[in-house]
Image 1 (tube, rainbow, N blue to C red):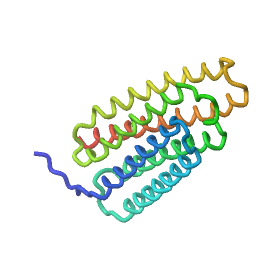
Image 2 (tube, rainbow, N blue to C red):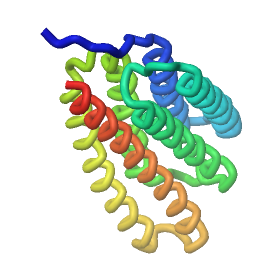
Image 3 (cartoon, helix red, strand yellow):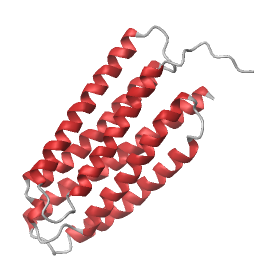
Length: 208
């Protein structure tokens, strides 16, 4: 029988779960941008509100680390996981900001690949939100990080197709520059989800 001298401190898992649920809210808001007649400014403002809430969750997590004598797993891993979840939210907010500030949703149509990237991010967000509560038991997590990594590879493929479209001559040079910046943030968000999954794998291996 395996004995553990570490407490099952529920507050940490609750904060991770709340942070991941905010990522689902973020990708759902980005999906709204594909709807006809959408109020892009409203979407951008709501994304900012979710991002601010995520910042608050991260601050709560850091305070909890500093005020807890014995943590459920390594402090460095808790800090890293919280920081990486916050990074994802920052990238999602940046996508909404750029689409609004650059007026890109006023184009006749955004590239199909851009919407496909948001779909991949939405899948990664839901996987992550489902996985966070399972950190408490460290069970049934392998499928999560394998699928999240697969989706990151899918995101890379879509991003390459998006770049091909952007440089095909379909859009004017200024629009290409603007959409390339959006594409970079989408790719960064996809990569950041993978970093979260890799960190969860590292934690699970250490605790097994």
